Length: 360
Figure 1 (cartoon, rainbow, N blue to C red):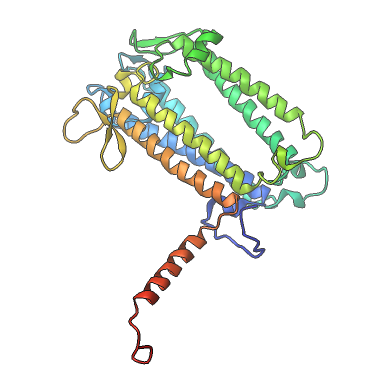
Figure 2: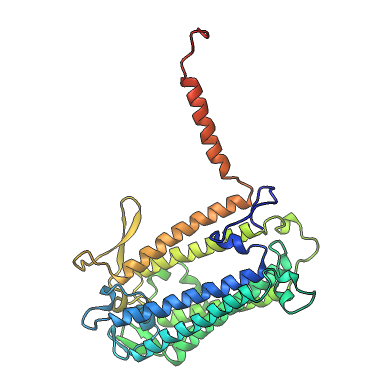
């Protein structure tokens, strides 16, 4: 459960995000499906919007596009020197996203309205009851984590195979080509320290293949194993809870956002100049931000600048969310900060009050 500081009558309004589905595994699944539908809808709708206003005479990176460069980067759209020559493939992909968004949205509504909010209410050993979970149950949580890791690994394999069979955009030749992954463990290990400057598509695909292997093996491990012996504080007892797990998840997203921001800002192999514009420079004023190194005129910004800055600041705010939920999970009550300031003001006012005649 979320941190309630010992109060048993805490309730949450509908707009309180994850708070509304904590302790209700059925609603939790419905929210997952609905959120996935929203992301699918945005990707499909925004892709069609960008395609409708696409101008082949202007560099793609100068058109503030976000979805089109990503589709072009994986070889969709018949890209030649950064120019879309076959928009039909993009229309198909975006339309499929819209269709699947409707399916996922319907699934979210079905799980929200048709099934019980708490799957634990179903009979023991029934199919819905198997998907019920408690936030402090290490066996069920590691089981769920294992499935997430396997799906991530399968996604990475699909990308590797897509590059091998269909091909992805190679900025060195200005067109799409098939890329065979280079599974050189030493090279993959060394790229941890220079990934911002990596310039080999084969090495990048090799890294994805290696990550797929690790995540699938990790997923199988988590599915097949349970706690050995007593679940003690040394093994994490007391650290598992909705608030704590949310903080771990949010900091992971924050880390990925920061990595994506710096990679997008500087790498020109996965983020080609043809599609995203020139590399950026990091500037400092009120806060750090990325700026274009080429003036696009009229206060315009490149796709690279939009993506890098968006990822950077989302990463920053997700980091604040991690700190907020981590401190709450540890028992820190933020209301006490306001109470402390109120007490300080009261004390200051008392000391500044002049004595009365009777006191003199």
